[in-house]
Length: 321
Image (cartoon, rainbow, N blue to C red; front, side, top):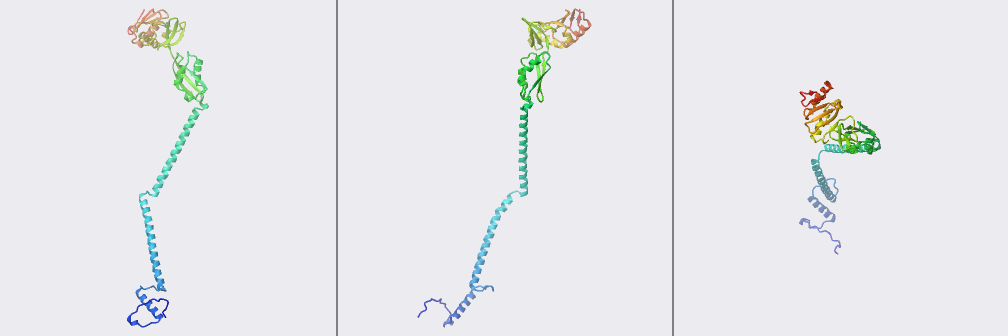
């Protein structure tokens, strides 16, 4: 009866045709396998263990190679980036300096804004507002009237008072030729007046005008003001030659001499004549050499106070009579 379990059939050489025991056949099989396989280490206890060990070594070697490849691949981009970036120390210093500059700029901006805000607040605060107006230089103009005209500046910021606004407020005063403004902190506004200097009285119609060298009437009255000569001219227009000559003469003469003049007559710039309070007549002539003629006339009046006539039309050869 055949064996139901199929056994491996091993072919043997002719010298071994005869039947062998099962144990002898196994030993012969392993002997042949051992001759074909490489030498095993002494630590391996069986053929199956040696094969598994080689497989594990191969797998571990492949995995180690893969890990080395991955590490090198990761290291290469970092090396490339490091080569193109600045050094850590220099980059850190640059960033620190940049942030320090930003902080300094921010502090300066905040400080400047605070100063501007404080300045504006102080200027427009009640602590620096106009509470008093002081007028200086007014002789023939009422100080009270000037202060009243400037009262619109009361309670206004003292630094903000402009000369233009003051000029508009003083425009009503013909006696004011010019002015200046200054602030005396904390509350006083000082206005200094320069008044016009009258040179004579011009009679027109029923009025007497006290005019200055520019022909501006500083006063108007129904009677002639005392202490000023009458101007016997056709007009007080400073563009008219006769009035321009008279104005030039009266502003050049000494004040003591002008006080002795009662009337000035001129139809043109070439025939100016002065009449003194004593009745004496001064022939002035034209408007040339005004300064020299003024000095000569002063000397003649001092030397010959009782003379009836004085001729300074030729100042180098004056004549008295």
